[in-house]
Image 1 (cartoon, one colour):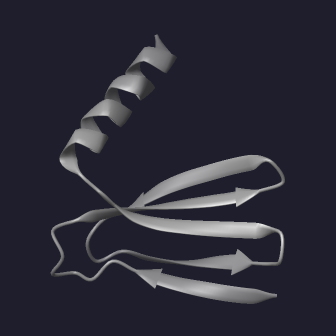
Image 2 (cartoon, rainbow, N blue to C red):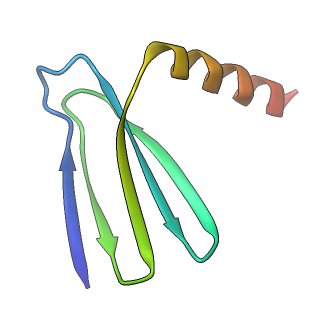
Length: 69
Protein backbone atom coordinates (compact mmCIF):
# COMPACT_ATOMS: atom_id res chain seq x y z
CA UNK A 1 0.00 0.00 0.00
CA UNK A 2 1.19 3.53 -0.75
CA UNK A 3 0.70 6.57 1.49
CA UNK A 4 0.42 10.24 0.60
CA UNK A 5 1.51 12.78 3.21
CA UNK A 6 -0.27 16.15 3.08
CA UNK A 7 0.66 19.07 5.33
CA UNK A 8 -0.88 22.51 5.63
CA UNK A 9 2.11 24.70 6.53
CA UNK A 10 1.84 26.35 9.95
CA UNK A 11 2.36 29.87 8.57
CA UNK A 12 -0.49 29.49 6.11
CA UNK A 13 -3.73 31.31 6.80
CA UNK A 14 -5.75 29.02 4.52
CA UNK A 15 -7.67 25.92 5.49
CA UNK A 16 -7.38 23.19 2.88
CA UNK A 17 -9.99 20.56 2.09
CA UNK A 18 -9.07 17.00 1.17
CA UNK A 19 -11.64 14.98 -0.73
CA UNK A 20 -11.15 11.22 -1.08
CA UNK A 21 -13.29 9.41 -3.65
CA UNK A 22 -13.57 5.63 -3.90
CA UNK A 23 -16.22 3.04 -4.78
CA UNK A 24 -18.83 5.70 -5.50
CA UNK A 25 -18.38 7.38 -2.10
CA UNK A 26 -16.57 10.51 -1.07
CA UNK A 27 -15.18 11.71 2.25
CA UNK A 28 -13.98 15.25 2.85
CA UNK A 29 -12.04 16.77 5.71
CA UNK A 30 -10.38 20.06 6.46
CA UNK A 31 -6.79 20.64 7.48
CA UNK A 32 -6.12 23.78 9.48
CA UNK A 33 -2.73 25.53 9.32
CA UNK A 34 -0.09 23.37 11.03
CA UNK A 35 -2.03 20.10 10.62
CA UNK A 36 -1.03 17.11 8.49
CA UNK A 37 -2.40 13.72 7.49
CA UNK A 38 -1.38 10.50 5.81
CA UNK A 39 -3.80 8.97 3.32
CA UNK A 40 -3.53 5.41 2.01
CA UNK A 41 -3.95 5.32 -1.75
CA UNK A 42 -4.61 2.67 -4.35
CA UNK A 43 -5.58 2.39 -7.98
CA UNK A 44 -9.31 2.84 -7.25
CA UNK A 45 -9.06 5.98 -5.10
CA UNK A 46 -8.71 9.61 -6.16
CA UNK A 47 -7.68 12.50 -3.94
CA UNK A 48 -8.45 16.20 -4.45
CA UNK A 49 -6.79 18.92 -2.37
CA UNK A 50 -8.10 22.48 -2.59
CA UNK A 51 -8.03 25.73 -0.67
CA UNK A 52 -11.14 26.43 1.35
CA UNK A 53 -12.36 29.99 1.55
CA UNK A 54 -14.33 31.62 4.40
CA UNK A 55 -17.55 31.52 2.34
CA UNK A 56 -17.14 27.75 2.09
CA UNK A 57 -16.82 27.48 5.89
CA UNK A 58 -20.06 29.41 6.37
CA UNK A 59 -22.02 27.37 3.84
CA UNK A 60 -20.70 24.10 5.32
CA UNK A 61 -21.64 25.21 8.83
CA UNK A 62 -25.15 26.10 7.68
CA UNK A 63 -25.53 22.77 5.89
CA UNK A 64 -24.38 20.84 9.00
CA UNK A 65 -26.80 22.78 11.21
CA UNK A 66 -29.67 22.17 8.80
CA UNK A 67 -28.89 18.43 8.68
CA UNK A 68 -28.88 18.21 12.49
CA UNK A 69 -32.25 19.95 12.88
